[in-house]
Length: 287
Image 1 (cartoon, rainbow, N blue to C red):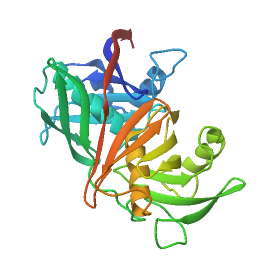
Image 2: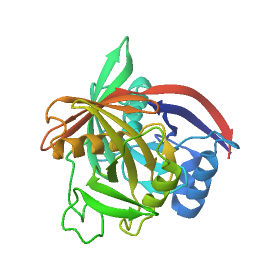
Image 3: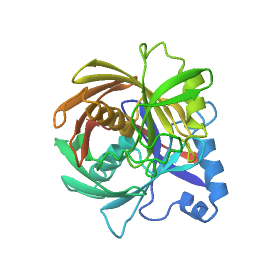
């Protein structure tokens, strides 16, 4: 059984994209969640298959221009991915599925709006409206003694962090560290993902404020490990900086990631993210 795919990335956050408009062999697996999860995990393996931070199914929608189903590298289904949704916009625009400058995408976190930057008939960048940053324990969710989500001490392994929990449609925990590049992410990011304070697991961002408009970040993504970029994580980090008064609201904040830069703008009601979306290659694989 042959599966056609497109490999895409936003700032190095790479996924396998599957066109589910029409017949597709992966759709037959959707009725068997365990089989679908195993297949996605196998396809995401960088040594023995296509490889990627996960897989994205681009599907028809009854309520938006298209629907995005996002799966992590371990085969678990996630609610949102900021870099992936930009790539979805480029995919449906460039392939003529949705030929609009403004595209709506249905996700498990609601309908998101994309504003396409078009050059010579091709989408080169996408600005995404990811909705409101929510600092509520139930929304993340998080379970700890503090009543709030901001500046909460949390012991992870042998170290205490000052944590800031926020939902960007997916769960995030943002922590400030002095040395982002030298930080032992595989130890503390991995432990934080499954910490008992986060019953649904969490994406962990470790950041450093460079100046009032620039943030450096590394991320450990739930179900995927360290990735080169995380769009919702960049939004969460910028939103925390604005919440703490370290960065201004309603102004562009550049978040520097391992794979590139994203520009985030945080207001009281909305967080906008702008960045590239690129096709790496297309192919066909035997399932």
